[in-house]
Length: 141
Image 1 (cartoon, rainbow, N blue to C red):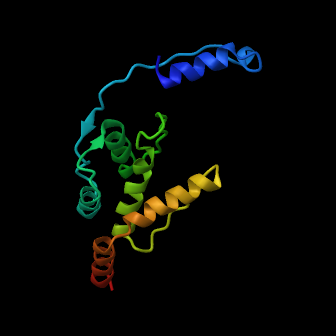
Image 2: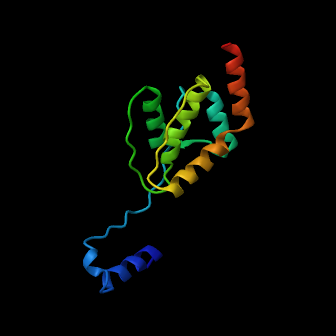
Image 3: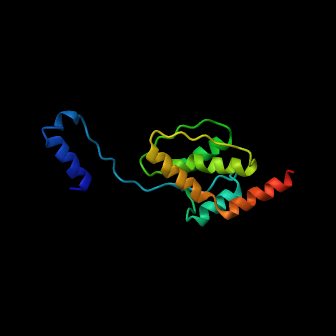
């Protein structure tokens, strides 16, 4: 029995909680489906990802990023730690590089998640992206 199965069993048999457990289902593990970065994504963003060890992205990320870059609204519903954040972080960086005056408003349901995402985006603000923004700014003066 896995740790998750053991925990579920305890919940189902504990008289304090068993009435709250209506159904359980453990989805079998499956292999990830990867795709290349969307061609429309700014090459500086792709290079940043690669420098962070992200060589390819998940299929759902590629599809979401492609839709966002095409101007469509997207809803993403995937499991924990499935890379949802990159689905909006990469298009945000793409737009900021295209227009340094661009802004994004990110609203999170919890302070802890907001801090985690702030750190994640802060880690993406590398000197190479700063240089790219500065070069873009000089060209448009």
